[in-house]
Length: 103
Image 1 (cartoon, rainbow, N blue to C red):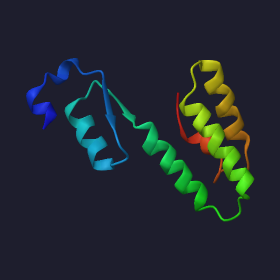
Image 2: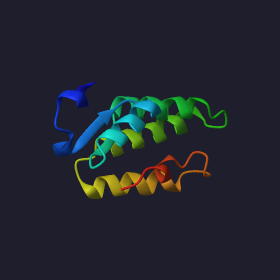
Image 3: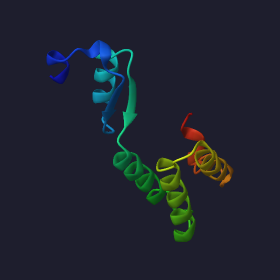
């Protein structure tokens, strides 16, 4: 509805929650904008995924979550890259969460 009353041609960023239909709808209307996920929803999804992995020790889960949290709130490219390297190096592909996001 917001797109109906606004000039979408000047929109540069659309912030959404984790709803795939909302993301798809925004992307089809605001084709030139970058679609970003809400940091709260991203962290909640990471927490949920970690909780679903039975082979992780609680300390491992906390370390991965804290590192992902640091990545989300990185102020510098170097800090973000450092978090990515840590996350991509942890365990197997199932828990190497850093490898799922792109730069």
